[in-house]
Image (cartoon, rainbow, N blue to C red; front, side):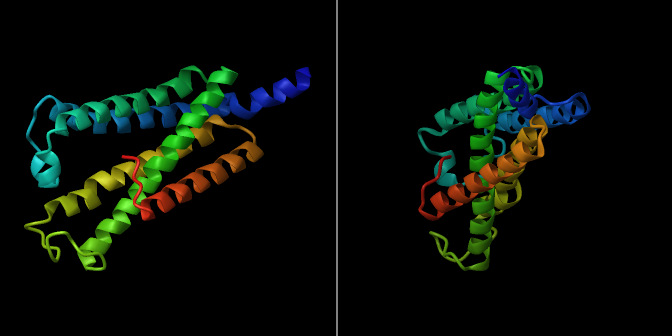
Length: 200
């Protein structure tokens, strides 16, 4: 019984040599998330710089500020998730809870980014029609900003969360299961995108 518990703890508690990688991954998630939170917080407070990069109908919507307040909250939580992995790495129950959150975040973020990049490329190349006619830079700057800024952020966030979970686990079997779960989650997210179900 004691031996079984020890093996379970080994699966999720990083060994000394892997702690440094976990710290790097945790802070990478924190910095990446907070960096994206700041413009959302700025827009939530009424800022207008950068709105030209967005789709006009969204930036002028009545719920625009609320969207950014909610996004700021989620992004701040995502940032501190990275820190939590570092400081609670020896807590078994909390560790599994953090892994579950990271898996959901990895799946949603990575699939969002992949789907968004492909969709915007299809719009630019004419495979998918725009609502207001053929793509042109003057009228559809938001497509380029999505392609070059926003969707890549989601993709990288998903990758970082996946790496964070990977660094948190020790055993090859545990890491293999983690990769399978992350891949399955991303595929499920892509399918939901094809079905026109977007999480955010």
